[in-house]
Length: 366
Image 1: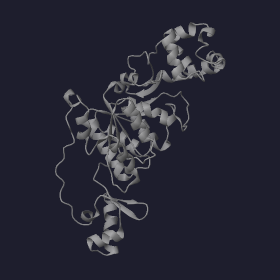
Image 2: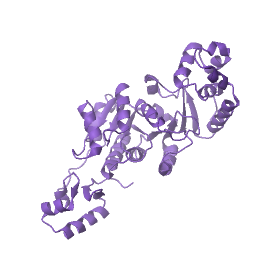
Image 3: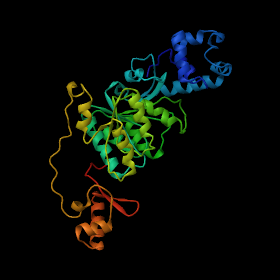
Image 4: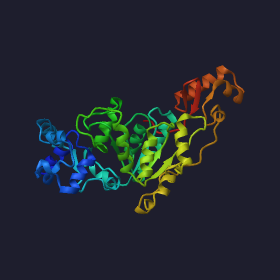
């Protein structure tokens, strides 16, 4: 990409150790653009930063980091977006602490489109992943861009669903944009870089670190008009994203689950606190006022389900063990076990810890 001649100044401030985003924004308010800030005598900057930080501002370490970032941005499809750029996401300007700059890879035009955050447990159930992927695909087909965090479980399923529709997907990273975490999602990250957007506020080379992931959650919610939580325990990081969404004035949605599932309790807590209960993509679209009017049609209408027969008719939607199924169906343990194996191979039943089984709604193969 052709670089803004002032980009080096933005990078110099952003990559100075100890000069955080809040200080950066204070300097911008006081002195104007980074080139004007750096032109000031260091004594004039002293009220805003410690002496060690000001000393680092002109260090070789920062100069080398700026060179690396500019070299990265010179590659096709790579972008460094500053607060002064027209391509900076407008919705992020509404949150209390927008990053002074963002590293992006892929289709940056998606950053200006209407979006929905879809998040949930890393240790999701197979049904939860299927729900996330199906819901995200329907919403993407309706024109919403799906935003999530590239984690295992619900995040990854949401990204796959987003890629399946015209809205595509944005992955907000808790690492430098040149690092994929978790590594198991490297193939998915490559697809997103090609057909969606990878986005990070962290400098190149930033390794995975615990505090970075809750911090990036405010960007996941901030980029979107609403946040949908698919599965979440009460201590889930997804609830941090939901709280950030509520604080930012975004809509919060949650999919309910079994009263016996620990991964449903976070969603139930959100619903009790005022989150919108969601059973289909239409429930989300109906709440995003003005979205349907912009020309996107609902895509979630389905034909009535055919009556079920066999063992599935006795399973219900909660996890169940073999003894209970024997009692309900009037079959022997061998008969039930044989039928469960067939249903598992057919993708209709999942095996859970503790000798439990759960039915799966049919979803697209991943």
